[in-house]
Figure 1 (cartoon, rainbow, N blue to C red):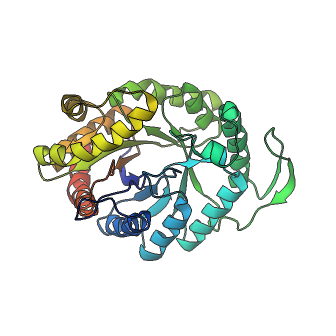
Figure 2 (figure 1 turned 180 degrees about the vertical axis):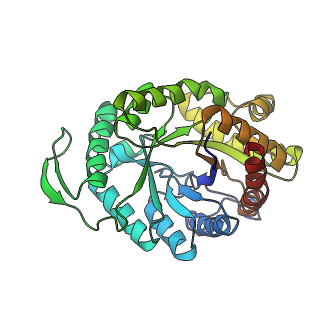
Length: 343
């Protein structure tokens, strides 16, 4: 278990409700996200991640632009994507946007690369879903070359080759922290090790300990490569309030809105309160008082040998004011408790 566990926050930029109960305009949600990042910086969190989506229930389709605004108003916290859907983007443009963010933030940029849990970006940008795996593999291979070489010579199957090509602006510090986001595919775990990149596990359901085989596989893959294992992080939904009952009651209605909306698209039955209480109480939803959430994070961190835990603190149209309170409690109370538990 690493001596230092870092704490971060992730958001998909869910469209939230105002004081009158109505959904806010996307533009206001984006402005609120910047305020939330400023608070996260003030309470001492290490990372703030913004997701990329191309649908009406999430406000952010260009996370790097939002992150740049956050960079201008923060001083210490690292800023990154959660995740960048590399399969439907251009690796060179992704590199350029994050190298620019890195410059604006004085070296605080990170990128988490993944295939995403939604597929709207594929038809939107003209990509064939039948090439889902090929696109990610090819583009990850190119992106890996971009972050490790000054001039890139590369050839793949989904775009023209590059020969001794320099890409600007370069990373000023010489290093761009790049994670591979994994939702449960052993192949993705091995691929992260092959590219010598840290692993970010997206645990969004069930017992977190079921990911132990992936942690073991990641370690074995590095051992076979003769390399030192890179850090492991977890991204998982959660919400902190003053008491367990308050957290459950505040989080449940908006979580159900989000869960049932996505579930209707995927053929899931509506979620009942009893199912929610069971998942929140025993599963991978980190919901409750600071003490409850701290205990769950500490247990997961020990079991999976984590270097970072990112709380996905917004799920559904929770009001901005409640999210700000959640950030305050997470930074000022949960974080010190977990560190004490792991000491």
